[in-house]
Image (tube, rainbow, N blue to C red; front, side):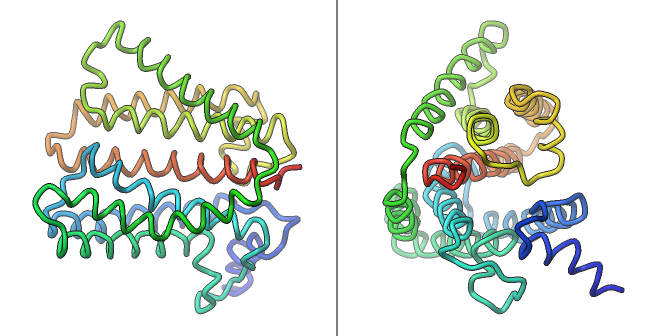
Length: 276
């Protein structure tokens, strides 16, 4: 009974292409794992190593986020095979294994940077360590690109939309983006929204997440609007209600990563012709 439950909700969505990759059960479990790991593992690790979760740290974290997204696309392409066995290294190339791998590399990068970086050089060392992993995987992905127009148009539109929304919000709330990290939170969600719409509305990609699928089913162009609304509301409540500014920054970084990671994966998937 338990084995059947695990197979139907976790293994089959991985192994069977005819089944949607995510459902309400595995999505809820993965979200709970992500939340618990963030609060009880990642956050204490950052505090113990005196890492300030701010805009500069998020910038140096981007190579790790891109690495995880690019590696995930290699699994989508079938270059890395799908498996339900946690002991198989390929398990680390898709959810939830990809989170474990990327977080472990990022934490190792922090330790390396803390050991070798001189004063004010932590960010360069940390980002550089991440680039060692990100660049080879991204470059391999680029060799697969066939849909450059969709990739560049979507990326350009996401950047332009982020700038426009930022300016519109600042007309009424001038200090809303005084924390530069807020721009990355907004931009990450917009990137995810735009990449999803392009991949599903203009190409043959399907949406794997059930809640996103419901929104897209109503109207595809409603999805980025929902993402923008969520990002702005989260920024507002975090800045208003959380007094610990470091923890506030940590929450923002988590949300920015979710948007940038999924958006980058969708962009690379689109460019690699997976949706053709």
